[in-house]
Length: 402
Image (cartoon, rainbow, N blue to C red; front, side, top):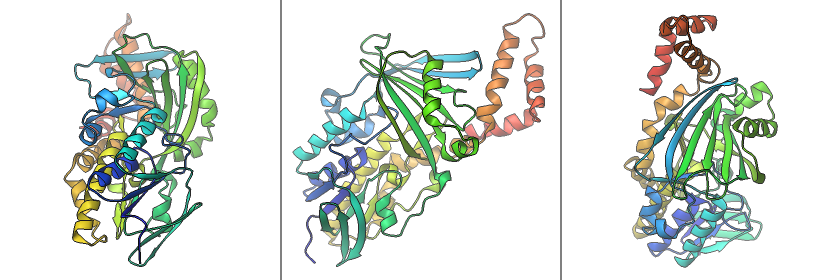
């Protein structure tokens, strides 16, 4: 069979664009299929990128990429009704930035075109089948026949499902809801803040976020899909309550909601099959440890590796040996960091971290800063006892984060 290109990349987000750029730099012919009118038109994230993997792909990205603000302040906030606990860490290093995906992805797509990638926008993949020693990708614009597909089509991974190697279940996902609000942050121009907020998601398993951009703020939350189903909460209403609770005022410039992978290291789907490699969200690559959520650097890192492996497969003249991709991932920061976050990932599935422990923290601090009984351990025990728990239960839960 004759092929239309060496590689078809399905999806024009950060993972797909990184794979396309990486493969094109190795001299492969690459076609990228993106369902949106441009890269970034349908891509959503909270809005923070750790730039190490981007700099490996494009060394001068700090000078040229449309990044918003360097994150210099890490804030964690726990809410208990009208009580709150807040701490802020002022950082020295500037290893992460707030971003707006519509700008960043569009910029990276132009980098891909400059590298020789042929991009087809407004192209919806409707099926995929194996034939002639490769994969035929079916789209609304016709069929593309290639010996290798790099899948970067989002968390629901339709290409994998078309090929029969993936099934979806609700517990594998979180839903993220986000607004970009036109209000200028009260920070110096060269500083930015990332805030994690616990206790404003109506008891749902998850938490909120706030990122400062140059002329706006990105706010929102991520909660487990099964938790939303259990409590029958409308996330569209919850985001309004969340914005009001944060005291954020201004015109809502953007509203978006999308599914986020929530799988952890041991729950990852198949990352490869003959003639197929899966990157980014489609591969379930997300780290959530209670303090930070990382996905963009993992998407770029896995995409870069997939592009490099594609070159090796062409050199071997064997596009079925995609197991090489898995081994390369295991030797990289991508799988190392996902594996390291596994314990805390499991711990965050415990509803007590969203419903009980914030109240314990606030009760202890109430006692600490009040006249009267200041035996803090006793206060903690009494609150835990009301919930049918003891200090042993608390210690056991906290071990997940050690």
